Image (cartoon, rainbow, N blue to C red; front, side, top):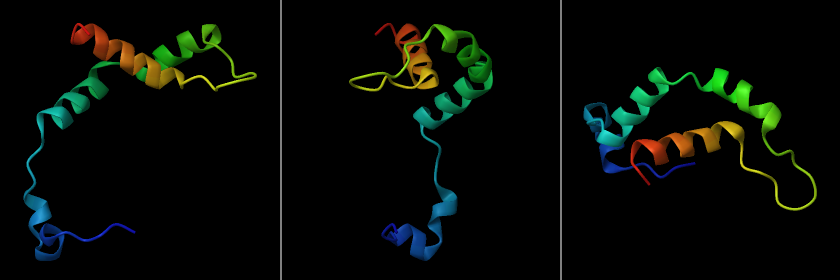
Amino acid sequence: MKQRTLAMMTGFEQYTRKTRRAIFLEEMEQVVPWGELSALVEPHYSKPGKGRRPVGVERMLRIYFLQQWFNL
């Protein structure tokens, strides 16, 4: 259970402004077909075995795309 903030108690949470990050992530969600890309990459992605489990396919794709877009 989350602690209620002053904004939640007074009803001001409906006036929240979208951050640039939220806008960018929504745009990215609309532009890139994540399900189709994940299906293409998944057969070639490492499988869990002994040791540390690999990071999920879709998460890694998102990380790679962010690295390319922001030249990281």
